[in-house]
Amino acid sequence: MSPGQAVHARDGALHIEDLSLDALARRFGTPCYVYSRAALTSAYAAWKDALAGRRATICYAVKANSNLAILGVFARLGSGFDIVSGGELARVLAAGGQASRTVFSGVGKSAAEMRLGLEAGVRCFNVESAGELERLNSVAGELDRQAPIALRVNPDVDPKTHPYISTGLKKNKFGVPFEDARTLYARARTLPNLQIRGIACHIGSQLLDPAPIAEATAKLLHLVDRLAADGIELSHLDLGGGMGIRYRDENPPGVAAYLAPMLARLEGRHEELCFEPGRSLVGNAGVLVTRVEYLKYGPEKNFAVVDAAMNDLARPALYDAFHDIRPVAPREVASHVYDVVGPVCESSDFLGHDRELAVEAGDLLAILSAGAYGMTMSSNYNSRPRAAEVMVDGAHAHEIRRRETVEELFALEQTLP
Ligand SMILES: *Cc1c(COP(=O)(O)O)cnc(C)c1O
Image 1 (cartoon, helix red, strand yellow):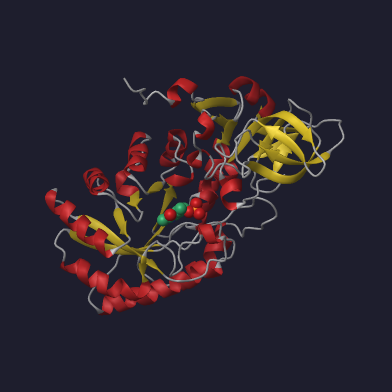
Image 2: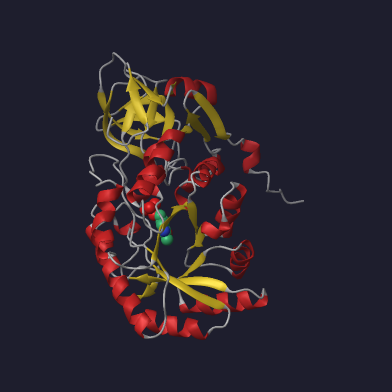
């Protein structure tokens, strides 16, 4: 199994920590997300160690996986959080996270969400537009509070990742253009209910090369110094998330090596740091376990039709993303090349193309590296109840989200009288 994977083979049978995926599937049913607490803890420790001795806050990006148990594990480890909605703020608070260690990102914060953030006392609003500055100032005024802010600037560096997950280019909707930042900071300084704290950027996701983020940091520092010359002192730098993981044959550098060129540029600086890792904390800590319903052999393609689908794990359909797929237990049958597909009525409903697998109908498959942007992007398309989620902790398994029932899917609906 590739490095960093929570899942490992024992006598050929896949396990997470001390439990076999086979036993977990029999107990909790399929499809089922299974996470490893130890893998979450060690991913967090890697970040913590890489930042040891610095004034730095790790703010886990909640959108990668927002299950309360996962947030709770990170909260207990001392993590802060990066949120993009009032819903995510409510989750953080429900899981025992601290608002004072939470940054509020996102291009479309509503007035109601700003109020929630202000009342909870979030550490910083990462503001993404001129309009948002004005709105936040007036909402804070109504509540008679000061809103701590950073501007999310767009450093226009190419993160060399998939276009759908690159966010720091001029053509992206995120952040404010680099050229506009000084004007906007000057405007923010005149607004009475805002407190300028820092500057933020987030250039993309699944980044494997440390150079783009180091380049973005250098650009940010240049801007910070020009702002200081304008009389605007910033006390923190939020360098976003985006560190990549291994899905297939990628060789991510490891947190320390990933951060090294960036930290070198920060030598001698006084600013406090903030990072917003999502995928790198949870991606390889989880798998999606699914059962083969049918094997179909055709003239051009063979299909393994499984009980998980694009509604459970959207990344293949959405980004053509690769997830390794492994049989949960070894089988003495001939292997064939299959497209692994779900039951949803869309041609884009696939989990993997052209995978050589030795399987029979009824067997279990593990879809690896499914801990990030798996369950959080799931839907009920085709009226499919969402999968169960299970956290393994040593020899114990906790059902951290039970499988939805069909009745729950239409519980909010009514027929006409
Ligand atoms: C999505 C996002 C993150 C997390 O990105 P990962 O690639 O999962 O590390 C961090 N910050 C912001 C602002 C984001 O939008």
